[in-house]
Image (cartoon, rainbow, N blue to C red):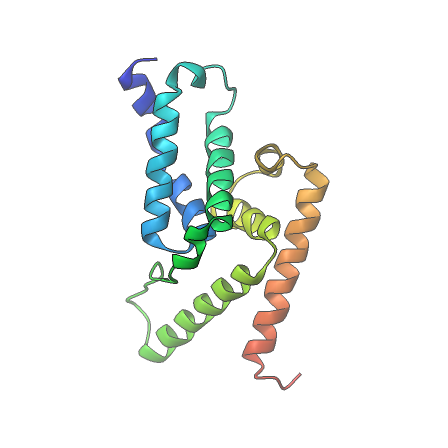
Length: 169
């Protein structure tokens, strides 16, 4: 595989790899490091890449595995929480504060989900992967992916509803 072929095949995946890494590792710096490491691994294995039917699924699987390994390692103790990916300049200050609060709460709720549910929500709702692709990446049954996503969404909805009702329910 030539360098040009590699760039055309792999570089469009860079942003998706970064977003999944950021969801799992939280820190921008850690996500950037993980993305760079994945791209380097893909480059070093560029001769084998052509063998894979779905390079995108392969790279997302690599990202998931690398991030989970990092979280299990001692490096996980050094991760910091930074969320700055939501900005909307066309709303009132009160609405902007409410939106930021909701985004922060959803993010906190997602962080509290089991790893598998967290990854599935990220891949399906944020990255727009199809169920069959997620099933391949996570090496799961497609039905199990749907069930896990449903449970994760229900948990997020219930906790967010409780937060916004200020405990009145």
